[in-house]
Image (cartoon, rainbow, N blue to C red; front, side, top):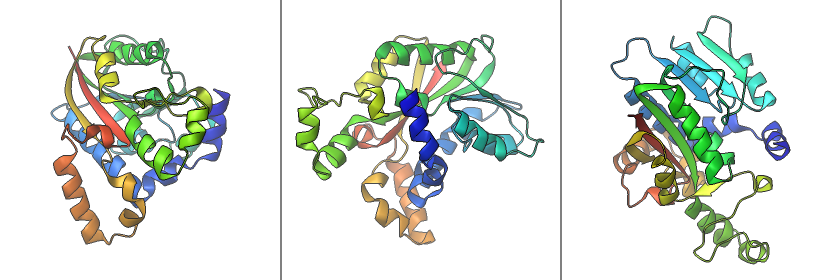
Length: 260
């Protein structure tokens, strides 16, 4: 947790999501949140790992009832600073591995949009997902975000010339799966890893989507786009973000699950 706190105390996560290239991930995630809430008149929402509140605060300011759980105090302070006291939101410090403060079958939508980035064993990931499923109502949805393996191999290992470094540190398996520890901050997965975790809980996958797709491979180009071109990029992105032949190359994915 010390590595994680140090990272988020210095990293501008809010700025990333507000950048033009970060908007692709944000707008895509919001699109799936809206789909999951369609037809529910007064939905109850839980975000676990709410960060600085980019999603939770936005939803609360729309009048939706939100419980926001965040591990890092620095992030929680930023989240709370955005509130004027009128929003229907509870912001509390907590851990994705233990949601015992919430009853079974409490929420129409539970979101894990960050915790899986920082859980390094299958057991931890399964515990976090199991807790999220437990507190979700039957028929409700769970949204789970992941960081994907291949973009790091392509951009960091080869693109930024770190091949010899990561090989010397034994950070790659023979089949090129990155090996992460807490000091590396981010845990990287492949689509089959996600499917294996899903198979252990009572859920049905509705969709697995690429939330940023090719965007982070061309950040400078995306950030330089005028409004018309960026709108066309979003049209293209939405047209292909569920193509399973491209999912593994996205930096971030979103697993859309329904509790059985």
